[in-house]
Image (cartoon, rainbow, N blue to C red; front, side):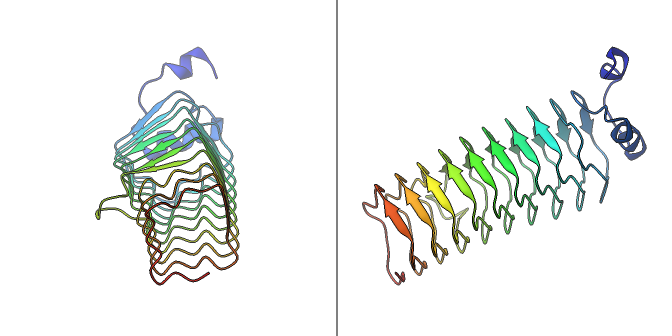
Length: 226
């Protein structure tokens, strides 16, 4: 990317965005204030971008690299990020409902507060990241691998991890901080040294799950199946 293109200013229209996508020259830019539904962002470099007040519903960003990025007040509902890399991404006041991160990698991200109901993280690898005050109702973590991940702000009634799917997932040193996991599915999951103190696991399915070195002090298991 040339110095001239790097200094070209804020991206403020879909036409400008699509031109820069074609040239793969979006790294380091601020992209703000317009609608770009179903835009093609596949397999590009979004290193150092700030995305603010954008409508990216249904965007195709499969296999894209989003690194050292800020997402603010952006609508990403139903957008596709399968196989993408999110590294040091901070998202706040965004809507990620039904966003698809199947097979993606999330490294050192801080997500929240955002809406993430029914987000797909199937087979994703999530490491050293935080989910903060974010609605994750019915999120899909099936067959995902989580290492040193923290869920903060889930001890209150406003956001939850209820009915999340952890089927076959592997969780290492995950801190749930008294989260509401009502009706969650942990069938065949492996949890190693996870903090489950005070969590609500009422009606959860723990069939075939293995808990190794986990702290379950005060966990509510009323109606859970094993």
